[in-house]
Length: 257
Ligand code: ADP
Ligand code: MG
View (spheres, rainbow, N blue to C red):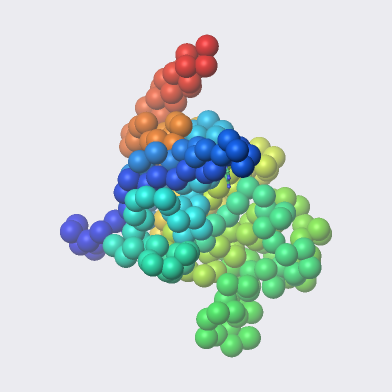
C-alpha cells in the first residue's frame, strides 16, 4: 500500500509561463499560466477542462517535461522534473495528442511505431516483437495490422496505436491532450472504453485534457476547471460536474458580454 506520507505521483507548484507577443518594437509578455498548482495521485484519472485558449495544452507540456516554466516547480515522485539543464532531467510519462496523424512517422509500419520506445530497453528483437503483439492485442487490434503504414489505417485504429506506443515505455503517467476530440463520436466512446480498461488492468494514471465535459464524466475521478491560466475549481464529486461546468460557462459568457 502507498505510504500516506510519500509524495504524490505528480505535483506542480506555482507554475508561471508567459509567451512573447508582438513585433520587435511592441514586444510584450503574454501570461498564459499564472501561478497554477495541482497534484495527480497514483492510479487517478484527472480531467483538465477549460475553454479554448485557457492554457490546458501549455500546462500539459509543462507537466510532461516539454516546456520549462518561467517560475514554479514540477515534481514526479518527489523528484524535480526540471534540473539545471534546458529541458527535463528525466522522462517519466508518455503523451497522446489530438493530431494522431502527424504524431507518427508516415513511413513507419505499425510494428515500428509501437516498438519505437522499446528500442532504448535491453530486450532483444524477439522479446520486442512479442511485446508489440501483446500491446496490439491490449488495444483491441489484430496482428494482421503489423505491416500496415499509417495511411492504411482508420483514425480510430491509428489513435489506438498511439495509445499502445504510449503504454509501451511503461510510463508513470500518460497525458492525453484532446486525444479523442478528432474521432467520430462512436469511435470516441470505443477509445475511452479502451482507456478505462487500461486503467483497470494496468493501474495507469492519466491526465485527460479536453473541452468535453461528457468525456470527463465517462472516464475521470476528478476534474480541474481552468480559466485564463488559472485553476478556478477542482471537483472530486463528478455528480456535480455539469452544474459546476454550467456555472463556469455562464461566468465566461457574462465576462464576454
Ligand atoms: P488550450 O489548450 O486551453 O486551448 P493553449 O495552452 O494551447 O490553450 O494556449 C493558451 C494561450 O497561449 C493561447 O493564447 C495561445 O495562443 C498561447 N500560446 C500557446 N503556445 C504558444 C507559443 N508556443 N507561443 C506563443 N503563444 C502560445
Ligand atoms: Mg489545447
